[in-house]
Length: 96
Image 1 (cartoon, rainbow, N blue to C red):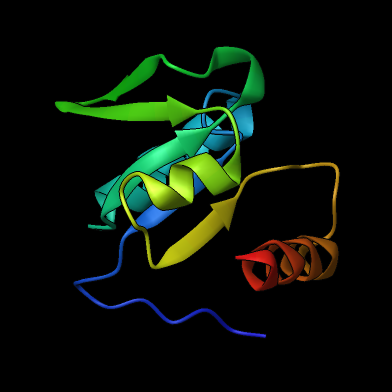
Image 2: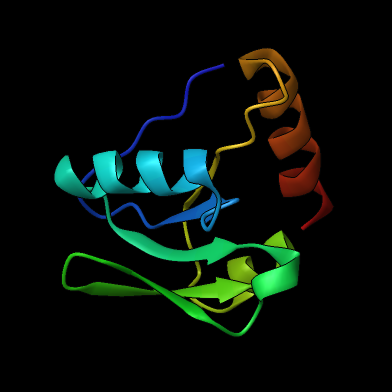
């Protein structure tokens, strides 16, 4: 499964406040990705700062999806294989 992004795509990052999420968020922002929010259940309601961009952190993917209306989810959980992550994201997206 591939996820295609264009200049109008809005992305949320799962696990944005963790080490992997921080690293991948920085790389995506450097590449020009429009990140509109992140998810971390324990840090919901806070923000993270990447360069000059402040990104809101939400408690659930469902909450984050509704707020900024992203077009593509991103996940930074390092405990799962890419296949598992894509299946997980597909199931979450189908629930909406």
